[in-house]
Image (tube, rainbow, N blue to C red; front, side):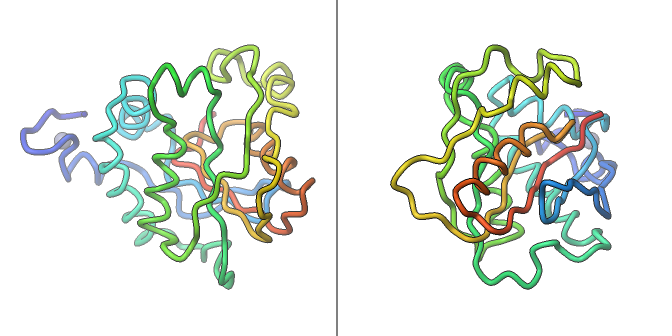
Length: 202
Ligand SMILES: [Zn+2]
């Protein structure tokens, strides 16, 4: 990725060029939101894109370096500071996409976030997803995209409902996907919901 230097998937110099989000942003449907970087950043985008569309799961470890920089450079306190128990839930992709790729990139990122940022959180699989008409990335931002994810997520029956959940996604653009996942969880009694995304889209 980027300069092509031998020895790693993305060299330390290129990694350090990735711009880190130091504060915010806000999403009223969540109790706090942390975003690592910007999707318009060419190096971060290539890493995320590589995992998502090219099956380059080895790039996940490069994203781990990005998370360590977030930990060092972030100026705001973590929104979940003060929580002593928290479930961590990936905003799962559609079944068709997961089958096509053989893995769920949100789940890979969730494992990484837990390892690097919240090792005390426990992984859960609360959400199920009804098939969507079209993938979010194929739609322009706006009402169509919002409509596309409305009521997409449901909470699986017979699962224990935690009081606090951290939702993990790769890219946060309009927030509609995360909002719908949060709506499903709140509907089942989850009291506090935080969000984390690897990159902020436009
Ligand atoms: Zn480089």
